[in-house]
Length: 91
Image (cartoon, rainbow, N blue to C red; front, side, top):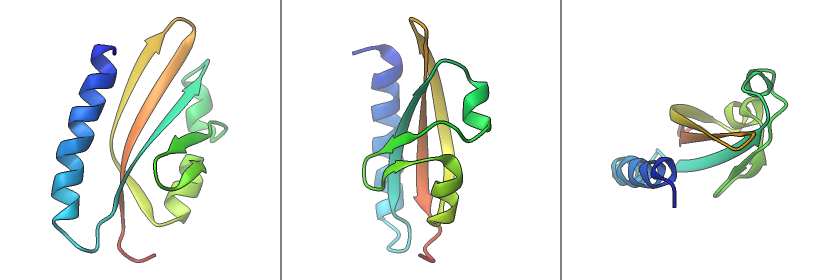
């Protein structure tokens, strides 16, 4: 397991513990893979989320989630982006 993936798991665990303490906040973590970072901001990257399934960043916000942290790592030709989400408590 790479150091970045281990860091992402530790960070999510800490985030999830805090979020679960509040009933209205539901955490999720999503990982996206692309060749270029630019594709993420264009909305063309589909992220695999643990609970929500496959979503783009726009769909995450539409579902009532917001990004509270993110990490990126580059392995071979791919850029892996991990986003940590929490619900807005309204959906």
